[in-house]
Length: 235
Image (tube, rainbow, N blue to C red; front, side, top):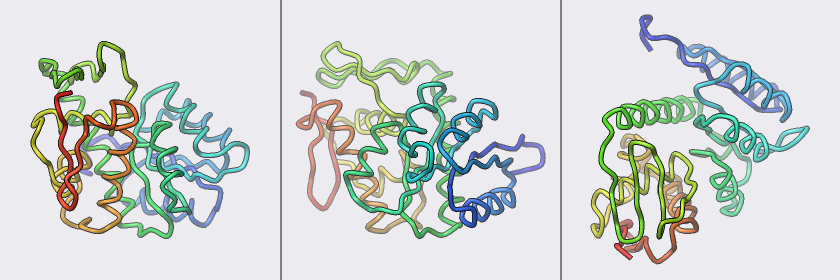
């Protein structure tokens, strides 16, 4: 961040003080303004008062858990959420994505990766805002209608609520409907990740979001090409 750019605000929600302080210290060193919360209720209160640009959210919290925090935060105001989880269970990941998390990291993680993921989330927000300002025409792929300007989606005329990441993923697939897009390309264009994340964990991030998206738009509409990637079909 340059000195001419207003500092972005990050809310760190983690009940283990050592981890919370370490995350806060690193983010402040990167130029962020940081708010800290150590339980569910205070996290929701801080999200309302501080209006953070991004939230780093642990799943296991006292008061109520990170999933409930995410639900309440997103109900009040859309904000990118990076979920921090000690469990690498697919069901837990899908629940987190389902309540509005944009991305997730499994503990233990490196501070470098946290900073990179946060920066990527914020770049995606800026890109989405710029796209909406251009008021592009809606895309129609079979029964799916996607409006990039309003960021609204319908399937067979019925509105479908998508998280910001799910919307960006669907839009990326829709722009080249019928064509297979590899995971590496999706990571670059949807998540804004560089080549540094060419790992199994990065590929699983794509797979988890595709699974969550399929549950909302219909599994048959997103075709898997094993070992390659995914394609959106006009059904």
